[in-house]
Length: 434
Ligand code: SF4
Ligand code: SF4
Image (tube, rainbow, N blue to C red; front, side, top):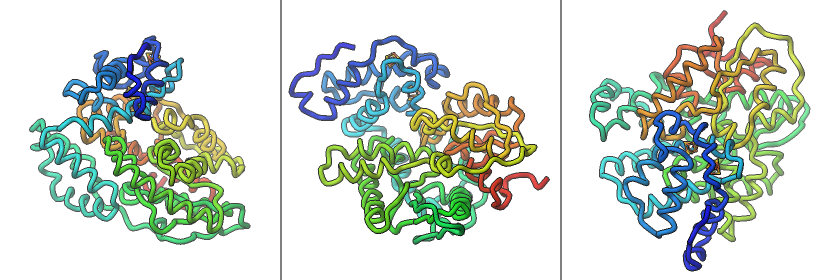
């Protein structure tokens, strides 16, 4: 694609990067076929190619974002299916990241939209605030149908619908310090506790700690780590996202210097995609660029790390598992076969639902802010999963677990919960007793 940025515009490193990305696009349109919003809405402006044109036009003309651009960029899930599909290697992720920052800096959203976004940014990344909000959500749940009838308040209704009906029990996995190996020591890793996951489903990191301990791995939960920044990053709130990233980089760098780390384990693929991008996000910060690149290189999804530990092959079990590959896993991190292979080696029968490349509609806060498109994608995803007639669904991202669980009666678990069970851990509570 030809571009016509001025030398003054290209002096801005963010614009220079976007210009390089734009120039790779050859307008072929292959990406439209796998874009969930284009497949759902059928509008070229809700396709990757359409959004690329809108972003080019906005940046090239140095214009503030307008309502049309905001509408179509807001509808983008950042699922990155287009990145997987694109034959020219267009780095849409960093292009849309730049567009979102530009929108945040130049567009004044309607009051209610601003308040809801401020609320999400002030609550979700902080476990204690999020826990308190879930208690309030339980009380407010009866108001959800009424809120969803008022267009501007739909996100609040969607939020109440998504809130779990019962609060999760407290977990040992967030206890700071070292959770020691219970077998001959083979390694030392840090684990991300994160923000929303330990509140919504603490059993995921509990299972991870148990499994790693039995495999001889010391797991450190360092003091001071927290949200990876993905939630605010996807809202274009770059300064907040970089603050979260710097804080985690400091914490993990201290831990690397103290005892060395073989990996930084992440059990939510949405967070994994962002932490693997810290090196890029902080590349222009001389005090952090090197440290952040080191952290990104150490970041591993739990299934990537487990695959290095040569888990033994187990007898087949009579349990059919539909594997849902989160977008951040398959498109963001290019981890596709690994989790399924681990499940197969552990004795599970793994089934691949049709249209596995399409997003379930969760996408961070998308199921709150774009609840109608999200609901259509969820229904499509659940139809495809249920068609495989599974006993259980496995996936590697808490956002997908929360989203899909509200659309089906089939239990949905994190992949590591099934692996922990198969290799000697307790049976996950969500599974039927027989
Ligand atoms: S990130 Fe997903 S929703 Fe956004 S343009 Fe690409 S394929 Fe479409
Ligand atoms: S597939 Fe790639 S090159 Fe083709 S239109 Fe989409 S982004 Fe551009």
